[in-house]
Image (cartoon, rainbow over all chains, first blue to last red; front, top):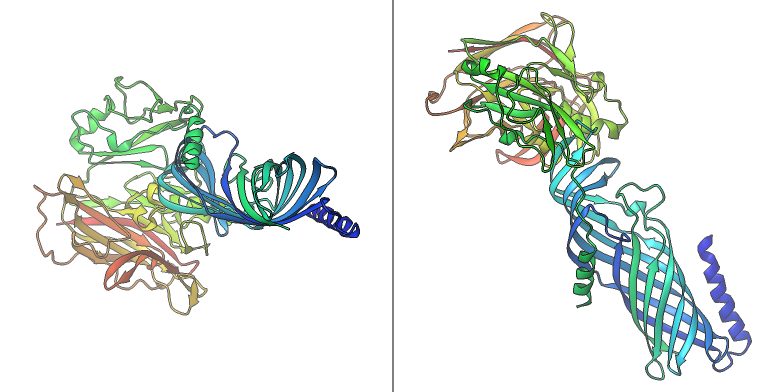
Length: 245
Length: 368
């Protein structure tokens, strides 16, 4: 189980801390609540996408418990556990966009020209691991990576106001498509990992404010997925406020 | 603010448009100089069906049609060169130069004479593996079924389609319609059983996904007043239970054989009735139908004759366009709308017994 290793690390960090009687300055514990704003998107927009007509980040909340183990006055290592949603809706105008419409127990492949409405709302258990550097007494920067396990998948869409070409080359049928919903929720990868970087500011004695960018390096779809013809990645920023113990 | 910036950022990343892979002829805009196309449509993906008045028949041997093709596509032989529509093959190459489509013509003359005879001879197998009658006035729902067969992991071979050719008809070949098991939850269309259908009209594959009942366009231009329809048929209902739109119940299946004569012009445009409104449209002048659609006795063909009865108003052929639909179906309720307060709803009912088989041959329309 790949995703258990960061857990173990967190436990080790915590345990070693308590065994050292939580010596002053060595550990920072905090709980944070925040929001993710970003997109689940291809890296570089494919040529089949002709226009992005709208983009709305959904309200995606995050709850996090984290710890920093300070190694010396400037350097530290952090980890934690975060429950979060990553979500957005987009409306794009596409031309000859290869897609597989999948519903219930059947599916149909073809080229769609028209508008595609996409709604992503995925719930993840995220375990970050980062190296901290204290820039100022109350401000530190961090750089690292994360692993996220998909708990609650939702990737739905509607192909509308267009036509769908299906069939063997030379004999294709051109079919009107007024509003055809589709869903790829069951074809999302359980695992996501990526890079993270950000800053954390101890604004007051117990108030901490953080900003991070989480850049997914793993496509959100399962291996061999053909529903859309390109991989898509989670790229989300996280703004959080928290209590610093 | 950030979102607007993000959107602007993304829009800046839009790549140059790729050349199109579409190689279509727009049949709506297809015209013949000096000749009115009484009917025109694309059949089986790349066959252009044209009906003209018989006086224009010889002009089709050398003519320059006006054709509109997909944006950026090219066509050979080039437009402006006179062609014989009986034999020409137009090759349309898409803007991307990679995909192309070859179009041929299927030409028909307007009906004339006191009797119009359909012997159901001359069939071929389409690229999708189902039989089509060379007389392109007739169509079936097989093109729609071809979308569903791969989902059910069935091959696209003639026997797997509900509408087939029967080699031993009353005389020569005949039409054979057999109700097939569909898919309980096929995408786009919940079709528990596929009833075999065969009708004077066209199947509009373009509607197959968006509004299935409207894909079967019943009726061809018919500027005569029909009195009755005669022919030969045999029918045997399937042996299992009746699938009532997904629920198995005990009741007999029946075939349907009916004809509808209706006024088709609406201002300057022409309308066609579909499975959605063929029973309820106020355009209908007269209707003829087989009263008893139950299994026929023995293995022999039985003669049928169905009458249009009294016309409430006389057709006015000088000022109006009329259409005649003749419809055969192996399960009478296999693809009808659900009726609410006598009005059709968009939801379709697909009911019948798997294996119910109707064979029809030697059909005549007798005019007044």
